Image (cartoon, rainbow, N blue to C red; front, side):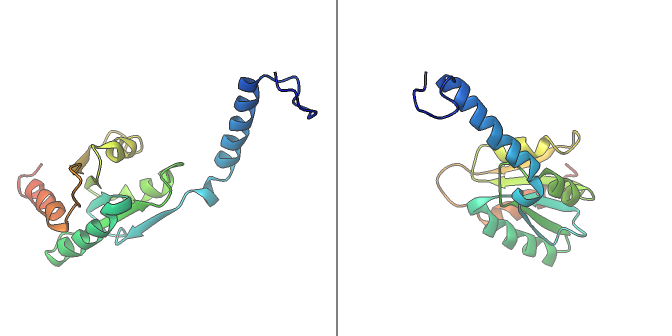
Length: 151
């Protein structure tokens, strides 16, 4: 039991925590338009959309430029806030893309998040989790290989 002279004196600690976290979550949900931020790069005509965040973003941006130089219309989607995830912005960016990828320095967690918003469309995983950076050539090689094999 909390014993301060505040109006919550009759609340237990778990009740207080639940009340405060519910209030904070509701505040975030009501302000999604102001809270969710993302960056898009060349997504307007992209056939290939590569989503990324954090340290992979620079490599993805360079990979997009490399793919475009080879005639593949690629674009990048980067959530600036990962929670709450900018789902509506991602859905708009992904709408016309034929291929979706998540390039990440993880084991596919970003891809799993993206798949919540793709209506069953597969998200290709370009993952690296060995402590080394993800390089643009690794991203482009994977995408070009799948395109050439029709996968």
